[in-house]
Image (tube, rainbow, N blue to C red; front, side):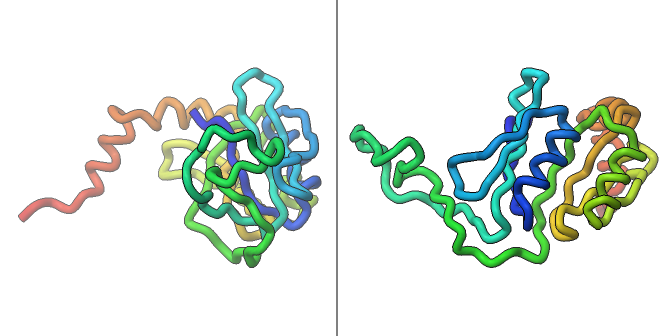
Amino acid sequence: MIAHISLPADDPRATAEIFGRIIDGEVMPFPVVEGAWVAIARDGSGLGVEVMPAAAAHHPGQGQPDGRASDGPFVMPWETQIRQDGAAQDASGFHVAITTKLSVEEIMAIGAQRRWRAVHCDRGGAFDLVELWIDNRFLVEVLPPKGSERYHAFYRPDVAGKMFAASLPEEV
């Protein structure tokens, strides 16, 4: 299961508030990265959506833990270093799909309110979702209740595997 995701946004607080609605979560500042916010689901699943400023980027840490105390609660040079030195990306191969209790109409309204692209899609007849394009750059697939139900019935090795195997070219 996904524990948390992080993504960049032009307005981290507003975007975290939207994810708070989508995952029925509490929204608060995320002190690990200056200007970041996080939405944490209330359902006990541990799902969180960390929203960082658009130019923030993860960088590999250096070395290994040496047993010494860190210079602060979030300063550990061997762990990922998040700095706002990146350029805002135009697109990414990364995306995430999350479930929600919101309806298709409610998800679409969020997109319209933020002027983000939001499209209700059907994935090959297997399940439906709303493509919500954060800042019109990053894809988050949001599965409303019926779409989520259909997704969980489909996205299993024994079911999806048959469809995926059928798309393979025949061997010569």
